[in-house]
Length: 292
Image 1: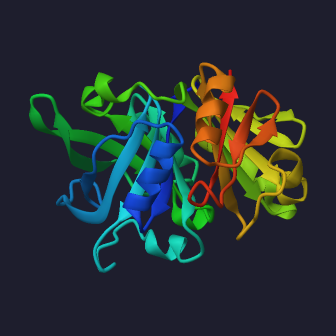
Image 2 (image 1 turned 120 degrees about the vertical axis):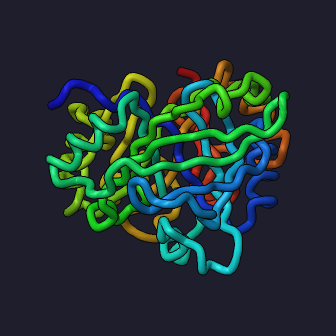
């Protein structure tokens, strides 16, 4: 494997066509959300930045976050080609991994035959205590033909202080960071999918029960065959394959988180070290709360 040039799951991406309802759900789950911020970007290196028909609200933790990505407009502006994904189901359709040097990552992924996007610019205006400022990013996208599960990219934050503002980092549920994202695949595709993520992330997979885990400095990617999915998240649906079935956050105290989540009317299901709320109640993707 390569030296580690990707160090974390930067954020998960949950797609929604009803941002208001999705935001209310995540606030009831105990997350503090940032205000709506609309995206500007380009589909090629050096290209003109244009509106992207999408905006987000985020649960921020300092280095990682959960992104609720709302789609706006009539669909004519969709440079990421997101809408065909959510025609299958609304929920998790993407994941971003974090890096400190997008050029280095882009070179490695291009040479491995995993990406041809180049380094793409992205920006969005965000509210700060001193007024509106422009947050800037760089992104390297994996070729979509290789990622049927959704939009996978590697991001470098150029202005992280504008995203992870202290006023958004405390959450009533005690969440401290994004712990993991779970991908379910057809049994016949398991070996190839694990190998692809290992090449992408530059890390060795580790088997833990039915899960194949790709550990990073912060957070981990988890992949499971559909035949064993019921052992991981019992009773959860599989609307399509491959399927981003859920995500987990680490919390300071799982009992406190459970009391809040149950008190706000959600059904909780026990897990080793925590609990989860199913996709039906959490806007298309299960969310687990783990004391790590």
